[in-house]
Length: 249
Image (cartoon, rainbow, N blue to C red; front, side, top):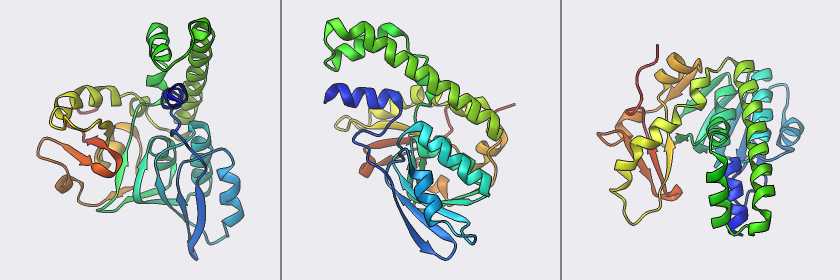
């Protein structure tokens, strides 16, 4: 089980992921609840009508390739997206930026983690060490490490193609590393919590630095602590703002 969990995290897949539930919430809107999985675009097509223009999401991530497919579907149809509660992981990396317009209400959170590009940068010795700690037998380490490296590299390639297709600057998938480094000091304030680190880029930065326009957000600044973070107990998550990042060109 530990082995499965580690592989899921490294591959960017929500642990114990099932599939998202879709339901109509109005004449123009559909709600998505849960992790993104293969086949979700088909479910969405079955519910969509000519008048559908909005996808409401509450998702903690899911399969990266399925999320890219869902993002392309939204972009092709020029749908809007609204976060009901949270959009993290693959939802934040691929579905959110693809929508024509995006709304983050005052009580919702956008939370990015490591992209496929960054996961693929891990060196193979680090992968071997982590696989060993996850319970992989010594005789299987070489095979498992090679398979994981291949999978991560392939997903990173798909991510790069997705970014180019949608006009998203590559830095969107790379700047998290600086945010995570800055978070180390903040994490010390929560010694009893094993908080995962996320990044919540502001609407202005999304447009100016990454070419992700059309973002409308609630009073984000008021929710962040003075030094730029938000702790979300429900997610055991430390969500960082942009304070660790330099301005873009």
